[in-house]
Length: 200
Image (cartoon, rainbow, N blue to C red; front, side):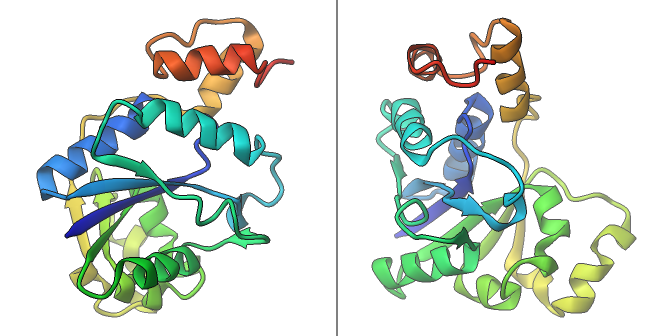
């Protein structure tokens, strides 16, 4: 069995997240993709994020129609800052050594990987799947290669449709009274308005 792991704050989850997960699943022939809503991301400790129960509810609504998508509470149930290496390690223990784990990240996250907690250990626990292409400028990745020699063997790039949707933009549009239809799944749109999330 081979499992994709897609973490994020999902504040809110949007169609771009779903497209990435489905493209990676299909192109790599994964058994499923597990969405992992973050607890308190260590890189965003200075930012207030929506309560975990709401973000989890939106993810569940977003993935309900896809039998190959699941959600994990691994980070929401753990106190303190969320570190990917701790999450992947826990999932490695849960799934067992024979299961292939594919941790999905964006190109911007890849460039910053050497700043993460125990990046070499993280790369040893899973295959890193980069959606889209990292910058062609070698200096952007020089710090990563210097800090983690041989990391290239643990990285695989998967091209996905470039969808210009961001959670930040969606929150801004809700605050401004603009439409978010077709940016998020219908169930997520209803939930946002029913729960009055992101309103001024």
